[in-house]
Image 1: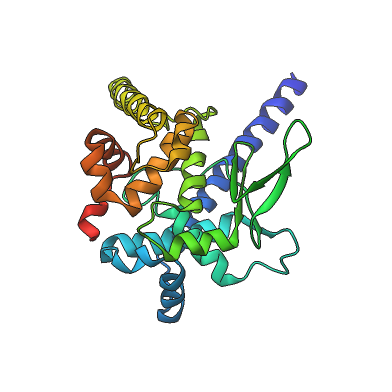
Image 2: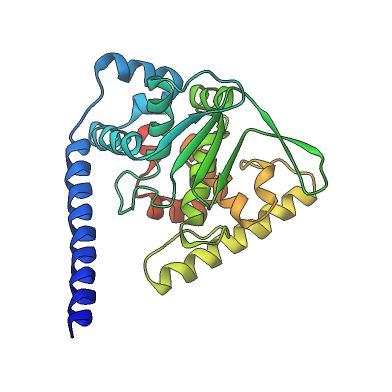
Length: 267
């Protein structure tokens, strides 16, 4: 019996430890959500992420709180000869990542642990040993990789529909359920069914236009597979909302319902 009591006691202590740790994390997050940027920090973020300047005050306030949670909980690592990841770089990347979280229920990118930052485009080898140039990557194992030059290029030009950070963090949302399939975590069977129908038809139409050599409002890279289509559509949703709503109204409505914001209101 003593052995059983010992096992039960240890189990209770472990459970109590998890509960206490979760309570501490919730308290820390609540405190971080109340923090705001200084005026100087805000101006610097706007310089490299111009969408930030047009956000409604309520969204911006929530975003600034989310940014502080993100910076507190994620690790930023300099790669490829970059000397350090500055505070400003952290704020810019956090703003871009957390824009995808405002106004909705989320888990603060629960699987994401680290953001690896290269100064510019970097090379990786494929399975055949050939070099491929990359601007960013998202790994379901808990990392996002970004080229800083591309981060600020996309952040400063908010109308080209190209934004590496929005793209890679959209992949993180897609990968939250384990599969990079273009279907992020939704609520209810009906939501999944409607999403699959809308995005399936849009992806088929999009590929048809690409096959005919026609121009598209969504970057052609989205034709690679459904996961890339969702990530590129997310970029377009935030940077070219009017064009996306005109050409793919059902996709726009699905993204508006998922992200719980309407970028058309920010114009």
